[in-house]
Length: 494
Image (cartoon, rainbow, N blue to C red; front, top):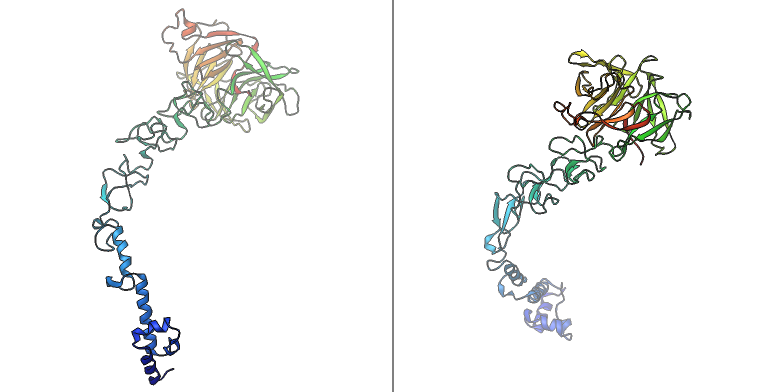
């Protein structure tokens, strides 16, 4: 380190401290005579001052009075927000000179604002959006364009996300054409096979056919089994099991019946689990909502399950008895049928409505059938299920009358008395009955002949008119060419 005398000599050689920087930096001839950084407190101080001044010059004009280049940095900030004090342009501050926008509360978070809760501001307002198009800001499914299938711009409600607008959305909201906006499977054109195809129907299983009983406000279609795409008017055919009365050695078949001509065509051969022809007398059959087919055998007084899905119009199906009998040999069950509640019913030879366990075949309940408080005498019957009106139907062979029966109480209500059309001395025996949901009529097999009866025609008047066949009577279709004892709509592979 220099002593005081050496320091003074250096200063005299280089001149004033503020003038030493140029020769010390630029003039290498006398650089050794100048103090090096760190060679004394005074020299260090002078060097720092020199560096500071050079830095200030490189950053900009220090005449702004801020030092450290702050003059050159404040000018762009001020310019970016317009005229005014430097740094005063915060968002939402009118003094900045920014453009104000309309901000409206979006309470339901659907991206559209409440027109009754708006204000202007320069910058964003939390919970608000820059439009006032929401007609119901309490409902996130209601906004402009919510139902593009109805109108891509109208403010509608679409709660079920099917792109159709609620037809009864409430005040202030434009109605659409969705008859059930809480069900994504119900909307205009949901069931393309219905006529017309733009009806607002329910098609839960996606098979193109509308639910026959979809609920209030929805147009009913022609699908009794809207939870099963394998059961619909395209897959179900009027059928019968042959031969009637049984045959110990004969072939058992499931045959289709043409409802327009009564032509009978066997399509599937039926065998027992051992592969042999079953010695059965099938009096009736039915199908449940899952596609399981059940029959009853008068010979063994047993309920059977039939599996022919693998046959698909060729090959064989299998007939397998359930473990329990429903009576003693000689007991008769006619009119086996599933009700709308999924229970399996039949009528015994004591005129009772029985309920069966579909797993074991056992009888689980018995209810006497009565009409006007009087036991109804039933002899040779056919039974069907009317899925439109949700009721059991029974054709009583002894008096040529069709009844509806309440399965809970056994009360029978007369629907059609066909005694004036048929010979009272020739009861239907055997008799089969089936309901056609497409035409709302029932088909009746009376041994060798096929008839139909319209159920949606009121026969209080005109029953004795000359046009009885077309008004309320039984309309002759044709002869079968053989005896038929049962009729049922069953799934057939197409």
